[in-house]
Image (cartoon, rainbow, N blue to C red; front, side, top):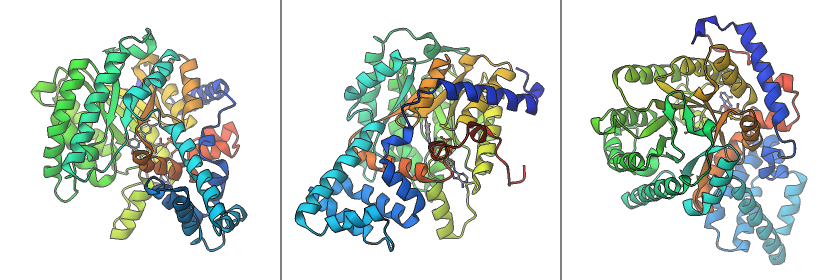
Length: 456
Ligand SMILES: Cc1cc2nc3c(=O)[nH]c(=O)nc-3n(C[C@H](O)[C@H](O)[C@H](O)COP(=O)(O)OP(=O)(O)OC[C@H]3O[C@@H](n4cnc5c(N)ncnc54)[C@H](O)[C@@H]3O)c2cc1C
């Protein structure tokens, strides 16, 4: 590869070419934000108080026992909005009578359920198999994510670990019957597992605390080791997600320590996540690359590059404690850092397998363009999207013959609430790429280079 030879101007030209081709290949009928009720999305984007009320409502839905109960909560939360928009006023008047409350509750419950089914592929791994197989047939690989986070008891942590074990087994045994899809099964480093599971360390232990990281790491390691063994036996891939900043160091250390153990040198295929919204993410990548220089494993480490799903949480947490924010506060700074890390990761192959996870056409096109111009093979770059949000982009990527993997949450509505709220938060932000796209921004604008404010 010849990274030094990639000229910035040529890169921008190629990126626009790639972006235009992907945009043209996207199915026109499916707007990814359709999954969220458009009215609610529009109103929520314009009104911070209403947005907060809707999020709190979505949070309590699973705990509601009746439609009346649901409507009472909805009108209660909306009642706190000082100047409700017109549709909200109508909903609140409906809440004044029993019949009105029942009707309001029924439509709210149906709305939330409908929304959840667009993002969650099935209630159990077995129930999800049909969707996973159909995706594969259409040239799309998957990673299963079992919903359920922030475990508070040892029993819950063990149940989550048992569900992960079952999911690995169910998907791996089923996947052997899927038809051949060469672009999903091989890259320059060798075969790629068909079965792929993403896990969260906070669900594997109730003891993960920023002030006592070693206890949490030890407890999580006791549940992660058997899962690594199982993945190895089944020839599956195990990916460890990254969560909020308070567990970031512990999770990164845990993964690198475990994968460096003699037992796991030969397998399984495994990976971790790098979050570009963190100001110190370039240093985390230094740590990962230094580790790769010391530890030899049979499978290259997969690094999934994301921007980060806990932006609002990190901002609020830092404000509450009077800390400097660990995340960039200007979107363009985060986007440029994402591009910088993309190039560093692609330059670090073959020690890493690179997975670029984004719905942002510019971020994705940048990775494809840089890979081509630096002499990388198309098969040595993976693109990843979230089920329900990245569907049109996923189809466009697959149609170009590139490797795309869709992150597929599995679980019930109650467990899915935290996931849904994070997706809602992200997509009602005016700075979200999907929001801008849904507002009809021109392609040239969507592909334009972000303008930095942070010193390089
Ligand atoms: C397959 C897959 C797996 C994922 N796994 C994880 C994971 O393990 N851990 C995790 O944290 N996230 C994960 N994510 C979510 C990801 O971090 C992003 O939240 C999501 O993809 C949106 O980013 P984008 O590039 O698609 O969209 P964009 O609209 O380009 O970016 C939105 C993101 O920009 C950042 N942002 C928003 N406003 C600002 C601002 N003012 N200043 C600076 N930055 C800002 C936030 O990170 C926000 O999510 C995953 C995403 C995918 C597709």
